[in-house]
Image (cartoon, rainbow, N blue to C red; front, side, top):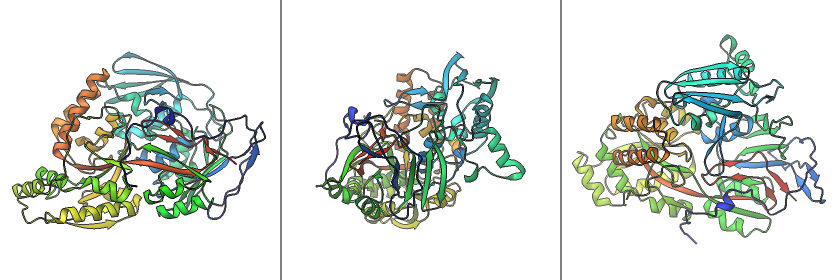
Length: 531
């Protein structure tokens, strides 16, 4: 039955692990070799209670990673891998509050200076100890990369104090600094390893991967699978899982078939038409979670007719978002009213949004000088996005607007969108805990291009308010600024936020250890399967 799911899920469910079994002390063995193209090679061990537990886990996803170098990648698929291999200075807890990670303590002598003390004895995967030298190197390197420098707005100095301490100085007060240090693009790398890799014009790539995270790089086959194995000397204690293999299965229905056949253990987001089938399978289980991802259509505002805000607003009114949710997701989602997700910090729940209104759309196109409509190309990278574009084709056809669909591989699409030759695209943006990251990356003039503002959107008022919020340390005042920014951006409409999906994860009935936070994040490094 098609339906709209309630936004508010049980906080207790979201803040705990998927489990149907009591956790016991586990004696683990070395990870076995997994052949993800065939059946699972199972490493099964016993708990004190005599229960069998498998510590080699296989999950499925529809897209491959984009790269191996954190500052170069701002996509969620690479980010999932980075959270397992690398650590960051800060992290978000289950309530979305920022907490120290690699940092043992920090202080602010002034509103423009942060002094950090690192945990001692943290090891990289090659056995080297992490020090402030590695941290300062990693942050300065990320700051120099156009794709990640938005995380370092107003930073004028990052310097080492001693072996385990360092300082960050900003030109003006910069409240999101700690939040940005939780971003995967600010992951801490091994200075010695990176410098050796980049010597003589080389690059940091697959064979160089060396972090401090709970899992280590093992194997990678492009568009096939990515495998990580447990790091036994992890500073927070070794994880229960001995290996995780992330298989790339582009077709959602094929993922479900693989789950039913026991070839994989977990799918983060089931194909909506398969949900009831999985729920009815006694060997499987599901967990529902409101996503922090917004699926949206973006426009290159430097190109006609998208340089005209009236045209963009007309397409807002012509977009039947409710139909997209119902047809593509069987009602598992909600139409979007903002560029912020509903589970995000600072979400403005007082905006009315754009109703589906073809007559208003026609009137706005006429005012803009496009009474007879126009034709444009929308770039997508998946079947589900292509199907969304097809639904919009039907909507826009009513106002004389024709969409041509350009299907590309995801990594190639990101490269294409970094320039100015594209017209429009559909993809998603996830960000619930750091509004500044969403706004600075996507909507600040200085972020045009590879940093994330693929619309080349520029509004001096929005720039000013983003910068005002960056200097405001009072949370309530800062959130009020964010709410006003959302109103202006929705009026300008460089994005059409389409929908916020409700993910229904499907998994082996004994799978345990996926950590779900209510702001939409999931962490996989401690998964096991009770058999």
